[in-house]
Length: 494
Image (tube, rainbow, N blue to C red; front, side, top):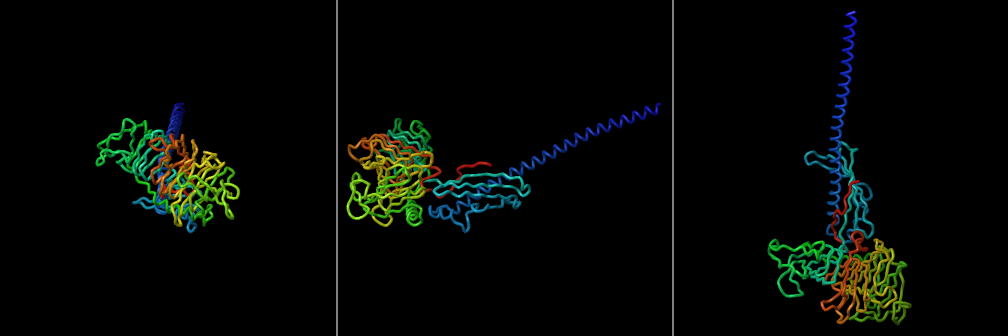
């Protein structure tokens, strides 16, 4: 009996030990699995981070690549770069794969680049970079960035000469002036200058800040030799988004080559319509049916810029209006250019079109001008208008010399366009006793000389509203001058 009990006790102990060992084994296996999973997680996390850094390395490699390919080149050369097929730009026709190296350990990963080249007239390049390490090639991270070249249409006002914005001026976009600016209106975006100190030509006295105001209380006098001595007041009542100076200068010199490129594109490459020099220029009336009327100007008043007569399209004789035997009609070249080797008078309205109108005498003669605001037709009473403000309608005006609002412009005038005067100014001449109410520019202004639609004695437009069109950031007018440096505009991980 005792032997049976002893055996029973031994069997119970063995079962107990087996249960304990099983439990311990389960716990140990679980612990080992947990430790292994944590090690694998940490390893994968490390490799995922390395893959992400590899993908970013691909982005910065492409920025370096673009800088070496297009920096300092003309618009024509940049266009040719993107259209080249021998070879294609990296990542355009096929994926580009590059190595990512550790300076001490050699190649540790690779990135794969896919590129969406700019659409015609766009300054945007989209680059997708996927990275992975050689240890874990299946662990991948993808980064997508948007590169953009800055356009001259990015500013409400860009000027090469000193500028003065008087009371009654409201500006809703960026302003940059190379030679200093006095601003007495309301700026809802940044106002900047390329100089720290400026001698305001409109009055005597000492130097003032490169961006200053005379709205009470006036700014203190700067210390031009030591900018840290005198603090720049915020003046949020005038500069609601602040003021910055000095910033790098924007050069107007390169626009001359852009005008030559525009002419070649319109005349020789089928990317627009070219009009030679005839009479005193052309009167262009844009229409919402997708066409434009054009007449040759036979005579005009050289003081008021008001057109007097038009030349008939065939034979002799003239017309008193842009109609009948003096008129031709063409389709608006969408996303392209209308180039006139002479002066241009322009008005009208577009619908779902993007077009640039350029005026330049590149074969000799006086620099060409663009005139806006005339109300001597039945089109839009001199206005220049969009139907849509969603980016579908874009107008660019590029003049070799001035862009001028004529004498008999409407009392309330609206201009929807990006305006650029390469060697002259955007503005309106002084007409004594000629008072107007309001001019509104929805777009941008770039002017080599001092801009202005009004004068200190009240002559001109009493109210000037300059509203920046945000669509111009990403879709400037076709062939509009741009910078040559691509910068990262948008970053995202996919």
